[in-house]
Amino acid sequence: MQNQIIQFLKNSDGYLSGEQISRQLNISRAAIWKNIEELRREGYDIAAVPHLGYKLNAIPDKLLEREVLDGLQTRTFGRKYLYFDSLTSTMDHSFQLGIDGEPEGTLVCAERQTRGRGRMERVWESPKHKGIYMSLILRPKLSPADVAKITLFAAVGVCEALKDSTGLDVQIKWPNDLLIDGKKVAGILTELSAEMDCVRFVVVGIGINVNNTPRSLPEGATSLRVESGEVQARVKIVQAMMLSLERWYEALSVNGFGPIIDRWRELSLTLGKSVSVGDVRGTAVDLDEHGGLIIRDRTGQRIRCMSGDVIQG
Image (cartoon, rainbow, N blue to C red; front, top):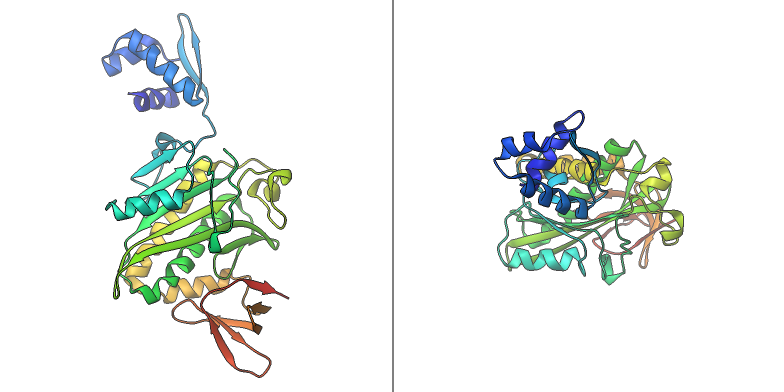
């Protein structure tokens, strides 16, 4: 009912009378008022003027289900959408949903995380209503040895969505960070449940600093707002990411990993740079077919790294 009322108000150029809403939905004026009050508690700014009716003045800056689904262009990704005001971690919640059999494309999003985490159990700062903290359940037909491909696929999909929706020059740092002008703006984490020869499901966690101010950012990080100089619409970014990720995921199943590797190379901040990964030092020259980073050391030997932190310079 509330979704229908909001849609009516969005489609109205001015005030919409209670009688019009009542007639459309076949409910009483008292029921309309009750639903309007619920919407106001969610943050919708709805004016009520006697003899004129109701008018929607502003939509809350929240990743509410009705807002994300309104305009979402995907077939599967994000169509089952679970929204929380607060979670310990969207990754933990989504992993349990994966065990419980939730379908591919299920998206979990929280306004804040009390124990958000990145790779190697690092803390991901998750201030309320500032960033995007979400996890997507996938059920790819891959062997466990190929699951690193999912991280690279996700990096390409998210990077393109952020570039398209903000116009910013976002680049990928192997294996899972997105940077703007050398500063981290987003991170990607993948965790899987697998048997010996097949993947049951993968959870892709994505954390993005969207409207964070400089004071709320850790050292070496930035946000889309800081880099663009303007507040960003988080709902539009979520929608753009779901569409981009779904397109690349479908391409992966049809065309294999080659096109993703090619696009990753184009978006890469790492290739061609002097890097170190653990004890391996040299020049990052390529990715292999499994998503490993190929480093050519000073002797000319090509060494493959499948995990670790890249330090450039």
